[in-house]
Image (cartoon, rainbow over all chains, first blue to last red):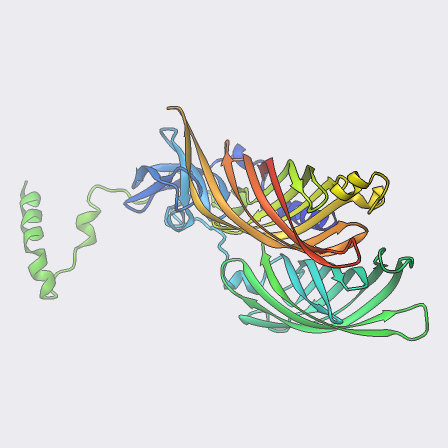
Length: 248
Length: 217
């Protein structure tokens, strides 16, 4: 459930930043500058071309799905045009339209990022989802939720972290992180009748984010956690994780 | 008339002159009678922000899920996906089902392996999907719908029998887009996790078949 909430929050915020609910009121019109552009029946290369619009024809851009744009021709035909072809049209002012593309440049600075990591938490399997926000290219704030699967108990962990990215323009971009959170341990009911326990946890860590292609990032990290237990001795735990993320 | 003859003459000569480096097609010839800039058109920038993007998909599903030894039961849930490219999407899902009694419990009459509250199974996962067969389906002469056949797989957690288990999932599905923002889909998925009901851990394959609707926004 927590996972779904994170996704919804990320989605909502994104729609606010980049979506425009009133887009349909003010149509975006472009003029075909190449000899022709192809209209596909669906937003993908596999869908057949059903119409070709020639040079100097005016098309209206209705919406975008991944790298495909739905357009309407003057004669009322609606179809999907690839980004590659759309960027070669002209605006009424005679300029190339400004169309966002997922690229290494965007990797160096984007607002939102979300991903899934898996790995080892003190010899147990751990699975983490996270969402991050970048106020600047060098700093990000992350919320993460983890599930730890140990043989005698499960644990849920929630963390808030501050990440510093000293070299965001590098394809392999290192980072350091500091954060705090809570960990709730639930002993398995079939083995021991012990009650749940919630402790505070803090961590310091290092890692790398590697730009793969399009909107994809590979990420690997190490974290040293300290669990502040109610008994006097604090427990130190090493965590190694790797996984994939997307940015938008 | 004279200019037309000159033009014709030049065009015939152009390849020869071009090869000799003496002639490059003059812009003046192409631009004859054309007005490149139309000043009466209002200048307006086309920016990405003006175009509505629909890369997110939210949906609900319901169907049947088999939990090994615990029968096949009604399952329902919700999902949210982000379409990264035309081929790849990332999807988070949550599902819930209530399992029934095992054959052993039914036969023995009174024996109970699990308390009632532990019979509920909840799962959540994050999966990567791959649209491998995009296409169109036709109903009669007038209707054509875009479709996608996809493979999907990922990892997550399943709460069952008082425990949380690490769970892999793998499957495939078929999606029919009724229009740009509404789709119906059917999914088949195998949820693989280790369950520890009788004190011994064993790997279980739990098949799930669902139908659902989703909305793109």
